Image (tube, rainbow, N blue to C red; front, side, top):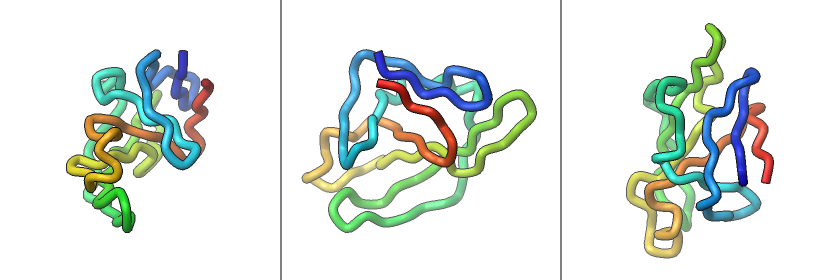
Amino acid sequence: MPTATWNGVVIAQSDQFETVEGNIYFPVDSLDKQYIKPSTTQTVCSWKGVASYYTLVVKGKENPDAVWFYADPKPAAKNIAGHVAFWKGVTVTP
C-alpha cells in the first residue's frame, strides 16, 4: 500500500491511487490533515492545469509547498481530481 512519510510521520496512505508522470497521487481523504496548512503558491502545468499547494508541519518543522493538488484539473488529467502528490523530501513508498 503506498505511503507518504515526512519527518518520521505517515502523511498519507492508501491502496487507491493514481500514477501520473512517475508521481503517486493519493486520494485527498487519505491525507492526514493535522499535518498540513494552506499555501498561497500556485503553478501551471500545460496539460494538467493550475496546481495549488499545502505546507507540511510535523513535529515543529515546516516543509513549504511539499504537497500539491489540482482542484480543477484539465480534462486530460481528470483522473487526479481529488488527489494529492508529494515532493521536497517526502518519501513515497509503493
